[in-house]
Amino acid sequence: ITFCTGSLGANPKNDLPGMIARLGKHIHFIHLRNVKWEDDGSFHEADHLNGSVNMFSIMWELIKEQAKRNASGKAVVDIPMRPDHGHQFSFDAGRNFYPGYSAIGRMRGLAELRGLESGIRGMLSFT
Image (cartoon, rainbow, N blue to C red; front, top):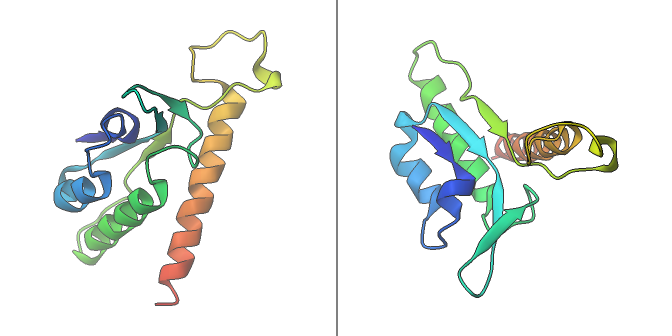
């Protein structure tokens, strides 16, 4: 499974952390992005850490899944992830790219998500 938090997170009824907990062994790629739900049922792209999807809980479950894989004794690699749909910054103005795939916006998203991952891993080392 390629697990896309943006596509699956568009429906507020989807329990993404629960889905990861149940389907984790089948997930082989993570597509991390966030959406903001509107009262009328619509949604739009949002910052990776500031949308309606609880990215902390998602990252927590992904780290737990990775720990299960590592504990299995099999040779495993980290589950690959890709932040997507970063926001456009002035550096990207006038440059040719597909919407949502600006260089600086995606790098910002990657930095935020790696920081979140590092923070959770640091918390777990104290438990």
